[in-house]
Image (cartoon, rainbow, N blue to C red; front, top):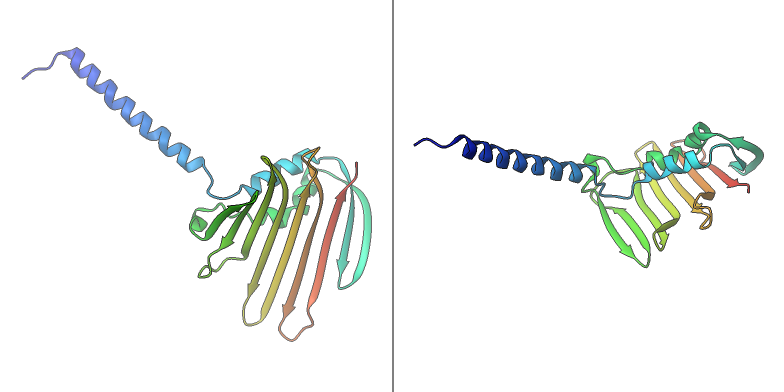
Length: 188
């Protein structure tokens, strides 16, 4: 049985549209991130804070140093490195975290049987705007133990980072523990 050319052309168009719609659906699923996009958020903050004046305070085992300086986008990326490295939107981690939303707080908690450094990420919102981000990280083996508490606070008027702190405690076998805390406050 012979089909008219118009029928074959029509059938080809239907197949092409079906294939195109399948591709569109898969692209959107790939682009959607399962967890809060911490890396993307920090990149936006670093760009918006370019050329900002900041008070940096570092405390190493109780000894504190204060520095007033101007930071540029690249410097901010260095300052925010702990937050950027804590981004959990990798395909290998898609099922590693439990996600809960309660009272405007988004929490990603590592499942007990998973072995990742980031144990918990909390993102607090007012309406749809991020106000705070808190990270709890730790790792431990026979010779080394480390914990990090990182906090970032957003000014609700400017929607830019207002201040942040990163505190690290490390213990290496046979050595005394060390404590390092970095704090930054952006100047108006």
